[in-house]
Amino acid sequence: SRTFMEGYGTLRQLTFGILDINYFTTDPETIDDIKSFEDNVTARTTVIPPLPGSMMSTAFSHIFSGGYSAGYYSYKWAEVLDADAFEYFKENGIFNKEIANLFRDHILSKGGTEHPAVLYAKFRGAEPSIEPLLRRSGFIK
Image: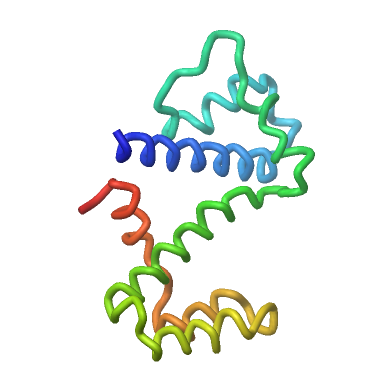
């Protein structure tokens, strides 16, 4: 079903992000076995056990050749911001001109002039919430 696939996709992306962050925050001298390392750090988000002899790390080019360097989580963070911003519009009317102007004035027109978290809080009037993404992904109602 759509909800299962969205949930699975969310967990898969979290698995990638967790693996990425752990590679870049763990002293490589402490990793004796790559497969064990991978299995340990991804255990909480793995839904389907990997096939014997397979490893996510060797096929996950973002980690080592994509220039992410512990930044893969930004995909999921972008979804959090997207869902939260859309929820703000839904709460106040999709075509609400005041909300649209806030979005334009604090997000679109500012670019990198301030920290993104500051800009987002100015737009939304609050910190981003993960609940809209959890709702959209079918984890909560």
